[in-house]
Length: 493
Image 1 (cartoon, rainbow, N blue to C red):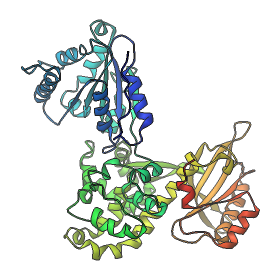
Image 2: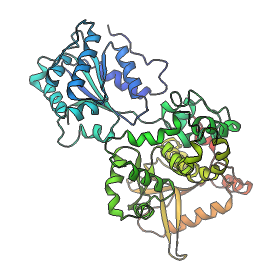
Image 3: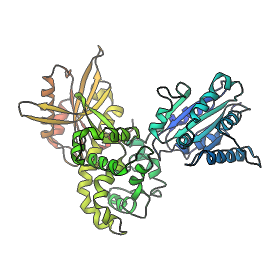
Image 4: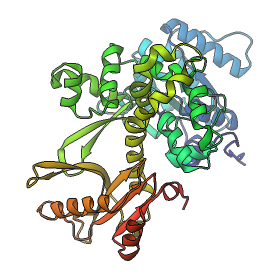
């Protein structure tokens, strides 16, 4: 009879991830199986896997940056401690170590975790091939029911483990990515009930779990009136770990060789230069010079490239980690003042305008798009959303362009793409009929295009500052106009 592997109470959310890990750990088939767990740092991967190992009476080894010989010594010591052997195991090479590891599960399925696997693979490049050979039919004849999980935070490396002609391609029965908490889960995790405060906090720390506990010592804003004080004491305080975290995030990425260049690229994006040409101009370089740096940042999960909603060959770059945006837009320009303990309280007031315009505003738009894609009732949108993006609409008559914060696409009954809605998102101002008229105009411009079906296009107005009375009257009279406030963004279905 199998012992229940219930998710420990100290693990917040992650129900789907835990279910997948337990399913993998309990696979009844004979022989060893392989799983890969990845995700950016500080997301709780190790916490999850440690809980799985404890629940399944398994073995876990966390690698460090070291030579091959030292890594083998550490692995042997950890394995002998797990087995209760007084004399540490000594392995000549990883062939011997993996063979011994595959023999651990003699009494049934057992999770075995190698955490920080990229450290081992860098010092022992043949290790993936050794594991592949152990999983081949010849190796499986002597294997036990080991459920081997390789875990790492170097996203480009972990993604490459199972791609193309990599040795382990086609070998994994689990490919689990532990993502950041979404904005709603993050609000619950930080125990913030006020939506405005929750969004402001999320604009700084995002959904990274470690920032709540290890980096701020469970210091969470008590409400709207405490937010500024919280920023001063928990984020801009040189004595707190969160103060320098943004700098360390780049230093921890193994593929980043020139941190100054990458920080400059991030600074350009945080300043609102989101297209490659704009970033290049900001840095005084040619756009082609930035292809590698932008590719590395994308592979590391620190930057994402988003296609324009209305033109597939035109896209923008956005920083995926909110703390990096906050650092480059707000902290970095005032670093000299902020480094002096006690100065943050005097400096923060003059940084708030930048915070609202360059950090909160763009972050709010991102959350509005996320809500439209994943949380909104399809009935409100007039259909199920299959794609949501921001975009640019040309206005030839006026010789100008209009930015669309939210463009929601779906599929009609003939499986053709159609535009379900266009939306405007304003964080810190009251939205009125002027904003509505702008959306009417944009919809008219799109109606004239032959490549976009707009028969049922609705108008969405998002606001963090409220709606004017005349706009509420207009929306009440027309179901094609939808007003979405902060309470609706954070409402649970």
